[in-house]
Image (cartoon, rainbow, N blue to C red; front, side, top):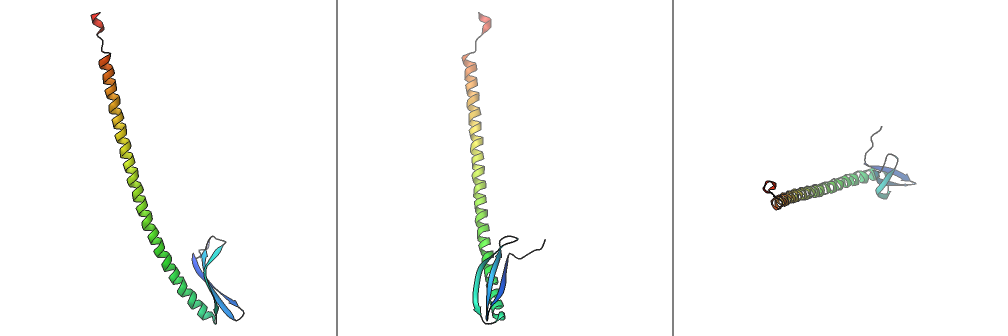
Length: 119
């Protein structure tokens, strides 16, 4: 299996002019043009523009990924905190219910405490 870059550039010639495209690999068979520029007089100018734009594009993408990662970490921490609070509330509820059950059993035992030997 060949490894291809997620982002790359392509240079094409249209008659007397050159065009450059920044492409993103969507799948193994399909790519998408993220940015393009037409009308370069030489291939060297088109390559220079493409390399500069690709570098800026990748830098911007890394910054966006870092921001999303921070937000994801915050969301996960809040979700863990909420799950812990829910579990603590559930434990408290179960303890309270068990205590009420024990008191009810004690009350039943006290109410029906007959001494059968006295009859």
